[in-house]
Structure formats: C-alpha cells, structure tokens
Length: 311
Image 1 (cartoon, one colour):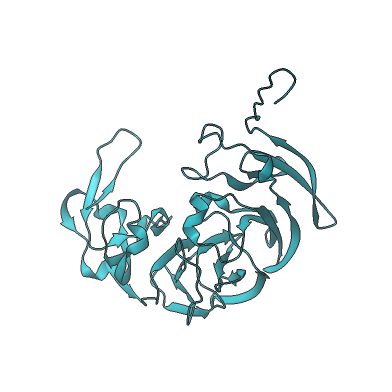
Image 2 (tube, one colour):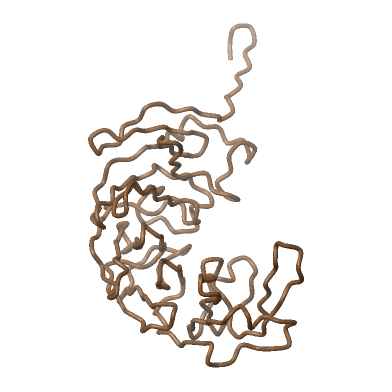
C-alpha cells in the first residue's frame, strides 16, 4: 500500500501498488499532480540495510494524485514503465529536473571497480532511458543547478562526473582525486552552493584510499574537498583538513560519527565552514583557492591529575 498523509487535518488516502522503493530519493510529486516512484520487484522490507540489498526488475511507477482513495483501488499495470536493470547490487537513485537518474556502485561495501559502469537517465514523464558510460561506479547522485554530478570510485580513486540534463543527457567533465574515498556516504555529506545558473562550489568529505564504505560509521573524515563548477567543468579549489589528534573520544556526547555523521560542508551567509569531527573550520576563497581562516574545537579536554608536582 502507498499512503498519502495530508498536513491540513484531512483524512489520509491510499492506493494499492506493486514493488518497493529504494529510499527517500525514490519519490517525486510533480507539479502536474502526478506521483513518480522508482520501484524494484524484490525487496526485504524497509528495515535497516534493506535498501542496500534490494534486487529484481526496475520500474518507474507514475500515478495521478486523483487515483488515491480509501485503498480499495490499485494502480493498473499501465502505471509502470519497465526500465533497464543495472549490473551490481548497491543501487542509487535521484530525481533531478525532468530526469530520473540511477546506477550502482560500491556503496557501503569494499571499494571495487565495476566492469561496465553506467548511469541511466530517463524522463519521468515517460521518455526513453539513456545509458551513459562512466569511468567509475555510482555511489552518489546529486543535483548541481539544473544538471547533476555523480560521485563514485574505481576501486582506488574518487571521481566526480558532471552530467548535462537536456534533450539528450551527456557526460561533460570528470575530476579525479587520486588515492581518496568518500568520507561520508549519507546524503548530508554533500552540499552545492550555486552563485549563478551555471556556476557554483561543491563540498564533500574525503578520506583515505580504498576505505570500505561502512567505515564512515567508525572513522573520521580527513578533510572537506571543495570543487568549483563552471558550466559543468570542474576545478579543485582546495580543502579544509581535520586535526583529529587533538580530539578526545567522549563516547558520542559532543560528537558521534555513527548515528548522524559528523563531517559536512556548510555554506552560511557568505561563509564557508567545514564540520570535521569535533572541529568547525572556516575557510575563504581567494583567487579560486581555499585558505583556512580559523578553527574551533568543542572536544573535551584531557584531564591530567598531578600529585606532589608529578603526574
């Protein structure tokens, strides 16, 4: 069952459906009063890690909002558009502009090189599916203005690929950070700050090369990497690095990498900040280069007990 929960106090409605969504990014309610949902035929439910092991056929379900009622009706088979099934197991999906994008990568597992990495782009109004060849897997799909950026690994290096989403989607540029991996796989680890229709700055936590994805639950990020986007062309502007040796583990009282993640870029009122563990580092862009201005640590201090002038 698919439920709609109104926020105006009116009654909820429901519709019988088939298949299971991947995650929260599998949904888009368009301005045309239709609901679009990416679904797969085989699922193990909505519990933790369930999305990571979803399998089976892939389809785009598209239904008018007017079809929701008391739940006695079901979406007809004509509401489902069959889509190409990608190779691999860790599935990523995102609605960006007029397109649904999806693909597979290493995800939370060990980094590995895909044999034939692909990004699939399909117009959610019912268009054909385009297949774009990549040099890396699909571990993150993010919106960048009216276009998209895909982040993934080839097993050793971290790649950022820009994708133009016009009448015929196409790969435009790729930036490669040698010997690096994503430091945070959860959605809040990425942020893009536009400063024009075709330009802006993005930030993403990075870590050591070849680190399995699940390690971001236990290990801190090394730095926030910043890239400049200029008409889908990437240029590195620098990074703001962590100093983890100054921190004391306080058992998740002030900072906790596991439950909510503690590394993310922040663009706030013209300022550039990097949350890295127990530190907030501020930077500034001068001549397209990131330089550190200041940092503050809210880590607990080490307490040293001395007796008779000796430790």
